[in-house]
Length: 417
Image 1 (cartoon, rainbow, N blue to C red):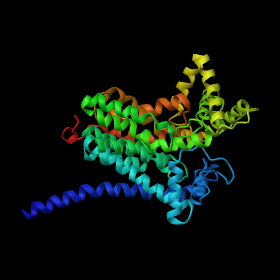
Image 2 (image 1 turned 90 degrees about the vertical axis):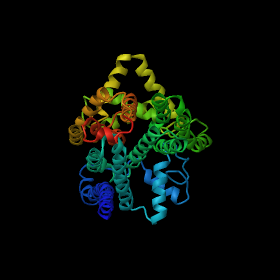
Image 3 (image 1 turned 30 degrees about the vertical axis):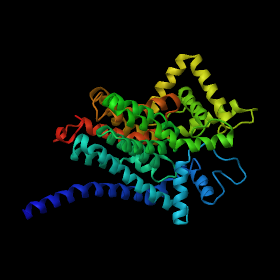
Image 4 (image 1 turned 90 degrees about the horizontal axis):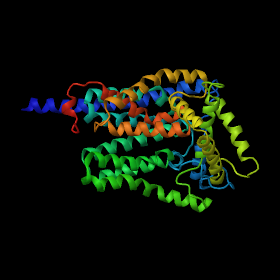
């Protein structure tokens, strides 16, 4: 009897320890890259540690100057507040805005994302596949890369994956509390990047489709709790701009970026930096004489209208944009060398997504993953397809790869089959 209890304890210890060790490995790899490798390559690659100036916003928030880029400037409305708030809390907690502090925090988030992938797969594909999927997430070069920079990707990827995991909990056992938690995670992710806004409605609709009218209450929670999370920030934006800005502006600017991918990709292949400069010249020409910037709500709408007119007046241009941005979404980076590297490592995942769409479509465990990947891929193809925008769905893509792989004991591990 004692031997049986001891064996059970050792089995439980082994079962819980390995995922933690893999997560710790992800943290370690991220820290090694951030402290030893990134400092040696940032200058040669002309990288900007804080290209979106989220650290600047965070510093002003932590210093009590408000959500502004500089004292005396109007309140910022071109960035969602969640990531700058995270950076501001780090600064207040540690008393410094040193890059190493941010990189260490993002290394922990990267490890936590890998652990979430383990939880995502455990009851869908079995423990072995869950460990493999977690390890692939922890070591994925693109996910490690963004953990070294003051960019939203690592933070956003964690929140998107958390929302996906919590949605899986609701699918397994529909309930109001679990649905509210999933909706809150989706709301925080949407406050990071507005591209995630449709997820709550889609997730609620998927729950109803899979579980029927008996799941109406949790489906409503999935759909509307994210909107409640957003509401205070939307009210704030209306108060400071007099316009309806749910999360942030720059949709119009990104539409122009996507139009330039359509028009100039084969002139400047493999370099989003060069394409961005072309897009900036186009935006400047469109805004010339208006007194607006691309960050202003009025300037944002002006650029959006210009892009829509151009695409809708010539359907062949719209189709070309859709196809090219759908491709560049997976690989286009700052330089041709980086774009080629990403193309090589991303091509297998694109194949996984396509195969999974045909083989796993309609299967309960896979549908949230396919829905998430499809949402990001389609929306960015419509707007602007750069490789960094595919980072938040890489954990879902890796999970799909594990679902395609036959696993011993999978039937027993998956309660939804």
